[in-house]
Image 1 (cartoon, rainbow, N blue to C red):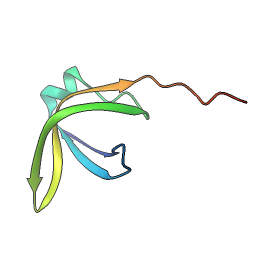
Image 2 (cartoon, rainbow, N blue to C red; image 1 turned 180 degrees about the horizontal axis):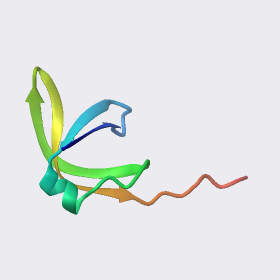
Image 3 (tube, one colour; image 1 turned 180 degrees about the vertical axis):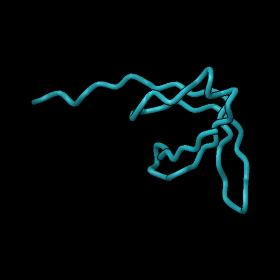
Image 4 (cartoon, helix red, strand yellow; image 1 turned 90 degrees about the vertical axis):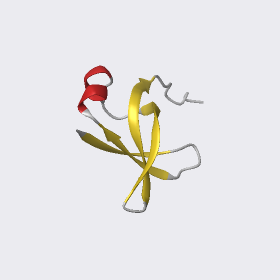
Length: 65
């Protein structure tokens, strides 16, 4: 089991829970931008996402003008 902390497009933080079955198919691949699919859950009064699928997305470096 792993835990992650991400920021969304508005800059808000959210936590994620990754159970072993999803980690086998969708492991963390280092720092970057991730597409996360899962179920929103609340534990101890705090919302998070139980991750079903996750993929590291490609990104381009800023161009030098």
